[in-house]
Length: 218
Ligand code: TYD
Image (cartoon, rainbow, N blue to C red; front, side, top):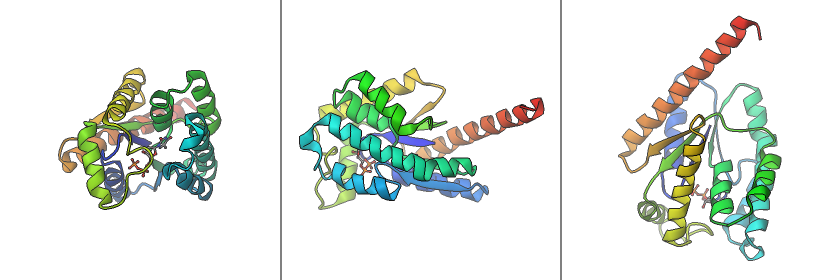
């Protein structure tokens, strides 16, 4: 499962809450994040977020995000999924589609090819999109980081963040079977309850499908 959205939408806090709730149910949960999540990808994370790769252009950045994702998928995500663990990932392929593809203005065919190489079939079964007015999200993000400077992407203009918000909502519209949009402007407890409801509905659909397959002997 992946969690997506703009800056300051509360993804990290909500993932921790959800992981606690699922673990209390006895599920084996792995929480991870992008860019990063594996030693190789964490090394690339610094290059990307410091802005060191920015001068080489959006295509170079997109390739670096994809390289980091490939390492994260093969070293961490796939082994966990194969063990039957529930993987909760803070940002994944939709962040690349939106930040690099849409607001980086990269060619759709190039982005599709890069995505296919990076994920190698590891498509999320559920994606929660935390939707929030970017003006609010950026204010929250600034408060969270205190005196530290904004990272490479956070410091972009409000107009760019608004385009990103629309791009995430467009993905949700195009892929309704995978994506659930949650209103992140609500109080944190309500957001957590909405996420939990979507995730539990998904998990029970998934276990019903597994049971049906077993009954059919597939
Ligand atoms: P991070 O500090 O993890 O913050 P948050 O997820 O809380 O915003 O920053 C990750 C940044 O990297 C964020 O601005 C989005 C950007 N990003 C991309 O541009 N493309 C990607 O594929 C991913 C995973 C992240």
